Image 1 (cartoon, rainbow, N blue to C red):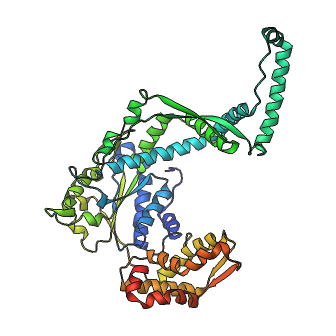
Image 2 (spheres, helix red, strand yellow; image 1 turned 60 degrees about the vertical axis):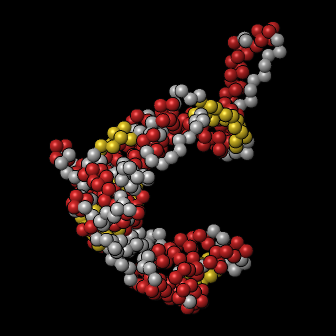
Image 3 (tube, rainbow, N blue to C red; image 1 turned 120 degrees about the vertical axis):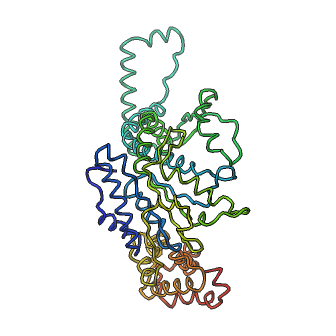
Length: 458
């Protein structure tokens, strides 16, 4: 997170507006929470440890933008981000994933983020070294001397200097050809190394702990395997650049920076948190609901989790909980969990007006995506205004008569409308399609008229 210039709450909302329609209250709350993280980085070190993140609980039906808000938030702050589902976790003693695995997964994401950044920083140097290695592979090998007498005569300083000069000139010619891409059709033999791992660990319970440090522990015991592989020059360059980047990157520094970033800017999005709310039953799938909440509590409150990269403190990781809360309500969560989500935001169900905007105004609008997809087949797809209105109307109608899945309904309807064009696109001679309301109704009418069928198709 850049301490010199970071997004203001107004700018954060403006960025979120590019991808998410409506939900102004939610955007406002998360923008303040994100800005507070930047503010915390700029207070005195003594006070910094005392300021805890204000975790957010989002409530609202599916398909209204809860996950998208959290994901875009993490992207804006360049923070390690992970989405988990509360229903996938079980309390200790039951089959399933333990809650600490989310911290281990977040740490892995943080390490990869920092590692990629460091690799980019050394890429120019890695490319230089990889190019030299490639030229050595491409250079024709020197012929062996015929005899010992010949060998002696070839060892004269003048001959050696001439051979070295010729080799240098050849190398520079090859370098020019390589950079111009004129050697891309050549194949070279590269050596790829990998550590042998002759067995696998099977099972689910506790597997995160079992294999946490296994590769490192056995790294020196297991033999290193290398294999030679013939590949095209461009692919070989990628392999060599990757190898050289790994050699140049200081992994100790990467891990240290990654843990620091995870601890101070990490965001965990816990979806379906409403599924673990409610009273405990004595049997069946609900048996560990409250147990999962109690296992989550120390992580959200602040604890230290052991990962294969070291100990990670969760005190300043931000948690965003989300759920539809159709059956349960936030007050059904245990009081301690409720207290750890002080910011409550209710997201509103989408109306026809919002559906139209989602189809046209967002940066990643569905209609824009389909236009670009079919453009690859030289087909110009044009959505008329009345078609957009009709798609939004149908989405609202189906959401009201069946399960309300919000904007996700638009995906289903658009796939149904464009099914024939998408299937026949490679073989079509026609290059332009105007999608109007009549076309939409034609494709949907048969399904929409049959209520039982529409429940399954739309």
